[in-house]
Length: 149
Image (cartoon, rainbow, N blue to C red; front, side, top):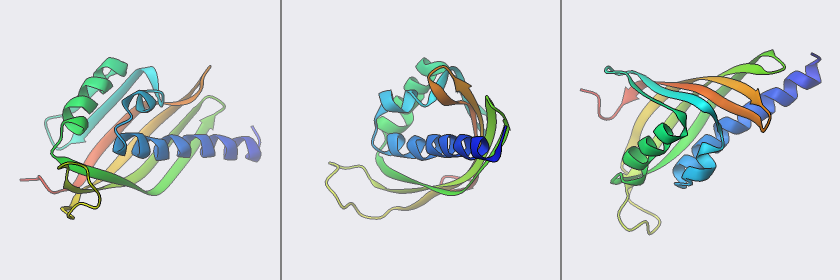
């Protein structure tokens, strides 16, 4: 694999990270699911207890419960993305995510600033599928958390 091939893979995987935030924030669940492999796993490893869902049905249910019906309007920021290509069909990623929030209310913009909800570290496993690059696994570690006790 040459350097150009690696750069193209890095770009595709970086795009997955960006689209994750966009589709999450715009509540576009169907587009959000297209980013993931059918056998995907999403987990929050810190804080305990570990939260984990798998597959598109698990992701859809989690998004519906945590994001769609939340009393918070969120915008996620992607910081310091890093992709490591392990081969033509496998890569891993790391990034820091910041979630900024305000009250969901009636969704009229702008809304009052609530603050930074969390600073998290995402560790990803990316896999090339017949449909293109997808997220196979994403682990979130909540490093700084508004709701931490």
